[in-house]
Image (tube, rainbow, N blue to C red):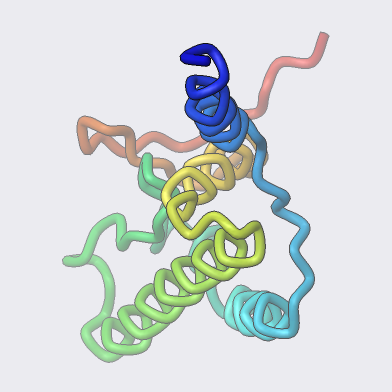
Length: 145
């Protein structure tokens, strides 16, 4: 009889383990996700030139940052700050929406980590990246086999 009482407990642990091992579906296409992606895409048209000219770079966490605030003209700083804040807010909202649509709101940070890892592999040569120690480096062309 004790064997059968243990069965529901083992089943519950099994389900919990499989939920932790599952991969989130990043291709969520809810109306909210579509709206957030459209906002990110529209803003990126303004951000891309700033990444290309080195005004902005990407942190180790995948966030935008001003590389050298002192060299950024004062008149542009407010606009750049709004672009950075809008990008960060939209990405956080997108990760939250993807986690919600996967029925795992606790996956929000995990989804952010996966996306940032994938993005870091696709950063174009010439863009600046700040490592975890705070050092900026310009991404070089990757060696071709």
